[in-house]
Image (cartoon, rainbow, N blue to C red; front, side):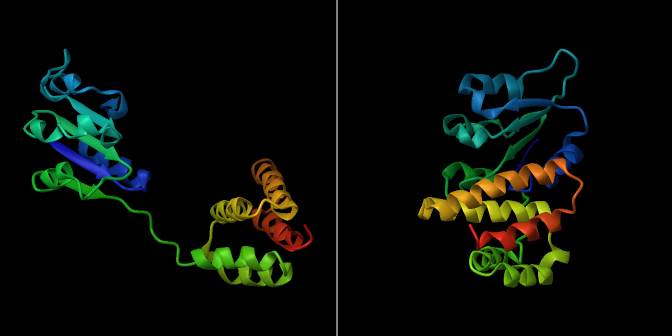
Length: 201
């Protein structure tokens, strides 16, 4: 039996794989496989058990091998395939979808995502207003995830305009990253301090 587990939420996907295979299974990197490896994986037997439990990771990246998968759907083994993303337009995906279970594990959309970017843009000219905007969503956000979004916005700004302010913002965020990982300060206080200083860079 083959099942495919796909999506950005790897934590939920891996939990579902353990529910399917149990805690003990072989792990095979799909990117390293050739088509000649497939009969051994899907039809061969282990020395210790007739029925194998196998997790293959990122097989679709290896397109020639992934395209052979429909030939092995009658495998006697339990095989989980973990993919970050699948091309739903491909012939192989359409063939598999009709015959095996494909479970999707998407990350929940952050309703505050655009507001996070607005906070960063506002902080570039008015730090106090940015902190006030942050107060409204702080209870719903994880400070480390929020920090990651600030970094992505700063990188985007730097790629657009590589000025002194953009370089300074990245340097400050780099320092802030170290502080978040090594000090006992409240993360939100450190982030608010950065937002208040951003307009002066």
